[in-house]
Image (cartoon, rainbow, N blue to C red; front, top):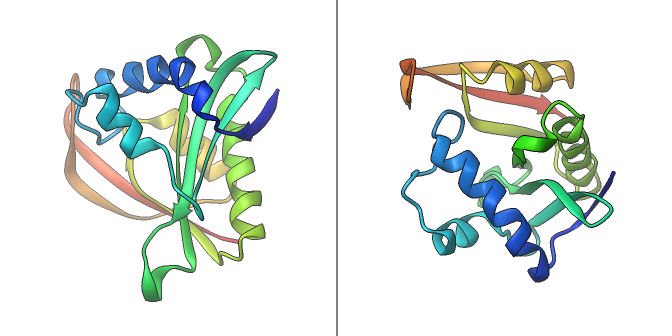
Length: 161
């Protein structure tokens, strides 16, 4: 697997991954009615942020975006988001993308990384993040409307770099 910066020519291959995840509405706080154009505007980071793709040959397995969590006095803390294609889940793609974003954030001079809205029901992601040194620093109760489980908490997760 290779992780490399996003190129405009990657969009046709990552668009279906993003749309599938967002339309499932069980992990991301994005509006499931977002158009592909809106999703592209949201997902593709402008420098100094970065969007990457994880590939196996020419196949795109997943994608991540990363950048500063806030501007100004909070700009020393990074954030990132990850989406993996349905056929690539369980193959270590998510872990590789998270590890890549941690390396990127360290190299970019960030002191920590924070995830603002991890659905408490997304146990796979929560477990992965905890295995990579993140802790849940708080949970906003009933802040996420899960399509099957109803109102569930959103974790704020943090890791020092």
